[in-house]
Image (cartoon, rainbow, N blue to C red; front, side):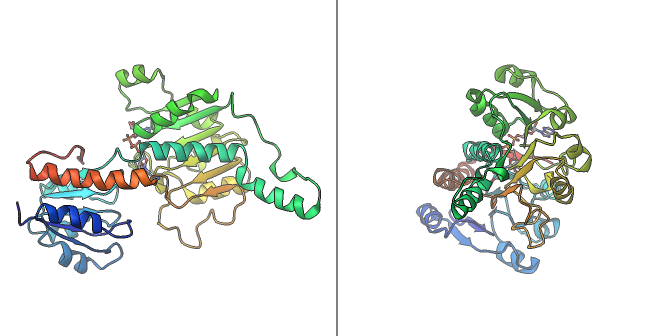
Length: 325
Ligand SMILES: NC(=O)c1ccc[n+]([C@@H]2O[C@H](COP(=O)([O-])OP(=O)(O)OC[C@H]3O[C@@H](n4cnc5c(N)ncnc54)[C@H](O)[C@@H]3O)[C@@H](O)[C@H]2O)c1
């Protein structure tokens, strides 16, 4: 085990000096790279003889896996693992370890922050203030109407770790809920004290609709031209899950035509979104740079949990969370 080689393919921290020091204490060989956009041959060359490969956003494809000589574990630095070809990994007999429990609070906080910012028109209020200042008198036209959030309906699609925290944290806001999660167990529904409805009912009824599902063939473009058309003209769509959950072109069209009041988005199909991203320039959209996961506490928690997973591997224990195709 002492000769174990651990390779990071890409990372978001400023550096991995802390990890290097931790793994040096264990006598492990540790290398880290920024290969997210590198050619496949370069990624293979860097990871060929690794025992453990740690990836952030780098695509783990069948071709990359075929280049590995002795990899025994892939650790995905993060919650989602849609950049990993799970079937190919499974076929190669390599488990995928992911870290779903480091930023539940943060993403729930961000979803609620975006919801409140939309409802209270916080971002556009700044312009109203500056324009009023220049004019020397108040003019609230650009933020009217604002509706009281208490009494409104929050729609939650996906009531897992994050979705259920959004539900719990909003308890004292006096809102009502419409929740869609066809995979929630009866026991979990009882625990949360909720009933579920179908997704069309959520799109139709929600004043704030927040998406918290994993990216699957069922959830890709769950917000599309048809489902957006069901929404109230006063409703807001919030997406902190994965970019492809929303059909960007359809959302841009819905926003331009005022089919819905606005949207708040943290995640994108291509990251960062290219300059031609359809929601750029639309006034009724709040955009954040895929940072819902981030807090100082969360950033350090995931670093500690990844070292914990390496320690578990050294001790012959399975990962705390593995994903199967
Ligand atoms: N923006 C960020 O920084 C950030 C950070 C962490 C996680 N995320 C994303 O947040 C999302 C939720 O993460 P989580 O940890 O709560 O996941 P989770 O697995 O705990 O919960 C997901 C829930 O969605 C439900 N679901 C699955 N398919 C569904 C469908 N078709 N319709 C309705 N519900 C469905 C599941 O039953 C589950 O309860 C993921 O997409 C993850 O990648 C984003």
